[in-house]
Structures are given as C-alpha cells and as structure tokens.
Length: 53
Image (cartoon, rainbow, N blue to C red; front, side):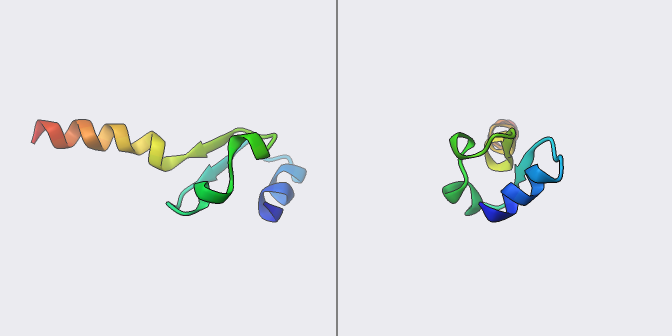
C-alpha cells in the first residue's frame, strides 16, 4: 500500500497489478486511482484461446 500511495502522490493515473499475489493485498476499494489486475484481464482471453485448441 505504501508503494501505491507514492505512485498516486507522483500523479500516476492507475496501478497495474502484474503478479498473482499482489491483488490479494491491494483492492480497488483501498486505492483512489484505478487498479488493473492483469490476471482478470488476461484470464478470459487465455481461456477462450485454450477452448479453440
């Protein structure tokens, strides 16, 4: 949370959570900037691709 606060204080427009463990501790409800969880963004596409194989 300290890192996200520093990023927001430095005018970052959003926080990208690029690790499977990070979203366990950082939630959109805890951060005032938009939070992007790459697992929830990428998983549907990976699932759809796997179904086509």
